[in-house]
Length: 322
Image 1 (cartoon, rainbow, N blue to C red):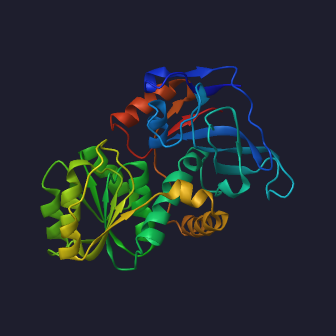
Image 2 (cartoon, rainbow, N blue to C red):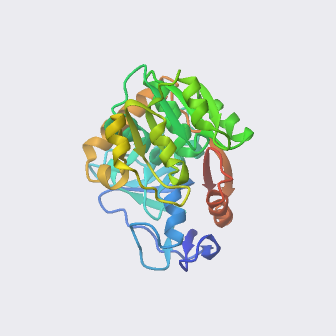
């Protein structure tokens, strides 16, 4: 079985396609013939041994896939031939196994590539904005990394909730992608983005700030919050884990909120189902639709990871297998 494997913890250069990867075990879940798989930031961390999960070498990369059901355990709720998308650890292979509560039917309007870029980004963003951020209709949401996979998902989900969205990007091309995702306003992070946000909000700031980037701009992100604003810590794509000066939180009556969707939701099937149902509603209403940036054949998986690491990606990066 072909699969994208990590042979050493030295980054994308040690990622190769092998022809004899072990077959997955279906167990009480679903066995999927994989058509496409998403490339996510945790995959990049895994190639360097910097993710919280540290599988033994060699191991197969991948966390999200889309394809057709090859076989399904009794009681799983799925049948052979159904189009599905799933969270499957080690899923960047010709076949992948997934638990039933981590598997969802692919909306009829979605391509396989869109399905491969949906669950992680959209479930994370929904969990962040609604459960952790308490987003309310009419609020203003500021999104860092607004042209990336989680950034475009956050914009669409916020707009689906009736919020105003402002994206922060670093180039003209990324501005185009953020606007395509539905951002009401876009500001440039390589300029004085804080001043631009204050101007767009009449000096008030953002009610919710969605931050998958971290790094040096974190202090200004706190300053960009409106009274009783919530800064959602989603990730650290910049590579630097920032710190916060606590007196700023007290003086401005703002909150810094951690967002760790994966481990939390993975142990709560009812939460996965609840988020999945609401995202299905938003998809049917046309509010959410994954923006696939670039697709690569499986054999170019290492290059996809390099593009992600060097922040050349817009939208979701996807590998195709069939």
